[in-house]
Image (spheres, rainbow, N blue to C red):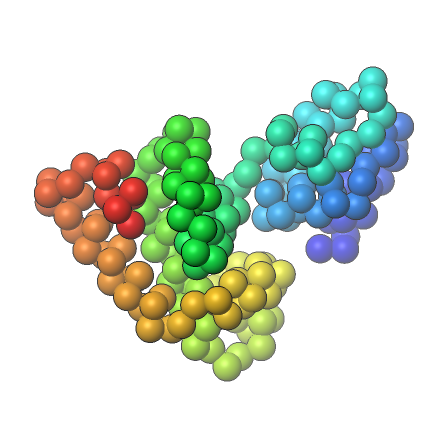
Length: 182
């Protein structure tokens, strides 16, 4: 994460633009530290803010596209934090802006499955990241998130995902209703 952080800071500096620390962190979060996405989003930010010469956290929130994984992280944070209104807002935003809405349920299922594994695992974050094929900092963020919910609740949520997926595929409910029901 430090290397990517330095890349963002140096790219902005080379373009004659200042960038706030919180803005860099938000870029890294929104892009899951994938360099291709960071480079693309950073070029967009630099172009947009070229005359003002400074990029702040609000600019990132308004201009940087959040990765699917980050949106699911936000959604589960809202749900497990008891913020239903925020969760509904995020779901609406995902549905409105998602090109392939049918993948949302799969993303949620995969995220909850990983969260469950992290919750019950006794392994170190590095080992978990290798097994789940995700970045170590993502494991640490998810570990903090998993502390907000019981393993039992995560397992129930996985079963609910499976049931909703079955109901969608069998024609009992439509995709959008299924996502909102979840």
